[in-house]
Length: 127
Image (cartoon, rainbow, N blue to C red; front, side, top):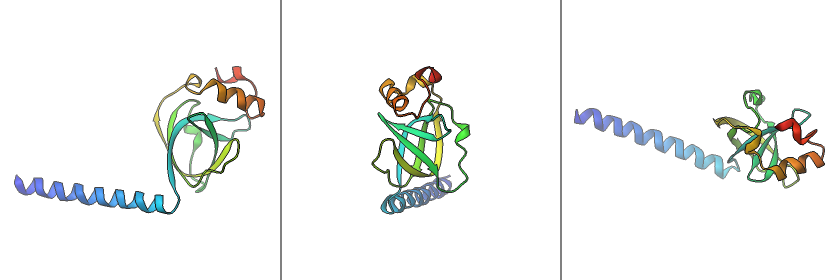
């Protein structure tokens, strides 16, 4: 029994070291992780609402299906640097859904701003 627990502990430690090492290398190379709400613009551009900042997402690998997300879903993305523009821009390497959401989960001031800039057709489109 003690031998099984020791083997399990060693395997867990190795997995932890590998995962944390991989994450550290990714961060050192300029990759980041961000968590926010999903939004799609009127032209189909996927966006991440990070706090009150919209960020355009582009698929760097050509394998991410943003169609699996609904407006307001909470998502986690692994990305490269975020360009300082409005809305911001970043390339995405991986995207994961964390929880369901609705348009009500996106701050109204962000929606109004994106409507004014022409990224969204109307505020009613989201509700």
